[in-house]
Length: 487
Ligand code: LFR
Image (tube, rainbow, N blue to C red):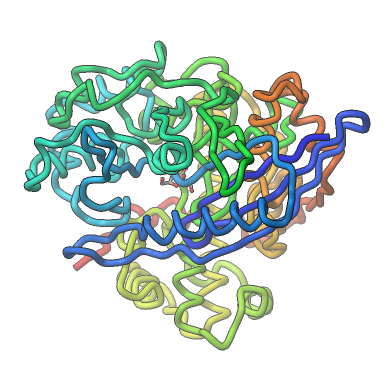
C-alpha cells in the first residue's frame, strides 16, 4: 500500500490530495485533504500570484497530514504552465511571480516573434504563439531591467520553485519546460539562441528532466523525511497522463480554467496546417507529444459568476439550459476575454459589435459562452484531424469542467461525437500516478491509465441531432471576419 500527496495548484484554487494505491488490487483512491483559494493580486502595477500565500497553504497542509500520523511515501506539485520565479545565487527569490494574465508582454510578444520569425520558432519548438509564453515574459522582464536583474542566478517554473522550497534542490521538469517556448521539440533541450533572444542566460536553467524521478526529501517537523518526486508538473500534462485514452482516435479535452483540446502524437506536428491553426506541441509525461489547442474555457464562466454572487455555477447552468441555443456567439479566444475588467461587459460588447443580440440575463450570458465553447471545440477537432490525418471519433473530457453536464451534452451535440467524461481530478491523478511510477509501484503511463479507468467512474453523452447546427457553425466560423474594437 502506498500513500502519496499531490498538490495541484490551479488558477483559482489549490487542492491537496491524498492518494492511496493498493498494489494487490491495483485500486487507486483519492481524497481531498485541503483546499484553498488562489487569486491574482496586484503588486507594483502588475498582476501577480500570491506566492507566499500558496507556500503557506502547502506547508499548512503537509504539516497537518504529518500531525495526523499519515504515512506518506512521496509528495509532488503541479500547476499551470509558463510562469516562473527568479532566484539569486543564495536561492532567495527576486521580484514577484508575475502572472501570464498580466499585460507586460502585450507589444513585446509580437515584436520578438516577428524578429525571430514564427516559422523558425514553430519548427524549432513546436509551441503555439501565445503572448504569455515564457520566452516573451522573460523578454519583458529583461527589457524592464529591474534593479535586481544582475543578481539572477536561476529561473524556476512555479511548481519547481515549491519543490525547491520543500527540498532545497533545483529541478527543471520537462513537461513544464516545454511550455516556455524555449525548448527544442525534437531534442528536449533549451535552445540557447532563444534564451539569449529573451535577454536571459543559459546558465539560469538546468537540464530538463522527465517525470517520475526523485528530486529530494522534505524534512517534516519531527523526524519524518518524505521523498519529493517529480510529477508532470504542468497541470495539463498531468491531466492527460490521467486521461484513460485507449485509442488514437479519441481526442481529449482537459477542461478547467482553460479547455485544452488535442490528441497525443509520437512526433511533434509542425506542418503548415498545425502552424496555421496555432496548435501547440507540449511535452507529455509519457514521452509523447500533446498536440493541442488552448481554448479559453471556464475562465469566461468564472468571470460571469463574479457578477452574480447570489448564484452558483450549477444554478447558472440550469438557467442556461432553459435558454434557446445559438442566439449569440463569441470567439472565446478573442483577446478581449483574457483579463477584462468585467467579463459580462466584454461579452456584451463583443456581441453588440458583431451585430448579434446582446445577452442580458445570467442564463443568456452563460448559454452564449457554452455554445461558443462547444463550437470552438468542433472547429479545433477539424484542425487536429487535418493536421494529423487521424480521424477523431470520440471525445474524452477530464478535469473540473467535466462536471458541467450542459457543456458535456452541448459538446456531444455540436461536435457530433460521443463524449466520455472523467476523471474530474485528472491533474492530481496524473501527478499521483507519476510519483507511483517513480516509486516503482506502477510500471508505466499505459498501466496508470488502465488503473485510473477501473478505479474511477465515467459518464457518457450521446450526440443528438440539431437542425440549427449547420447555420450556427457557419456563423461561428465567420465571427473572426467581423471587426471587434478592444479599446
Ligand atoms: C492550464 C494551463 C494551460 C496553459 C495555461 C497557462 O491550467 O496550464 O495548459 O496554457 O494554463 O499556463
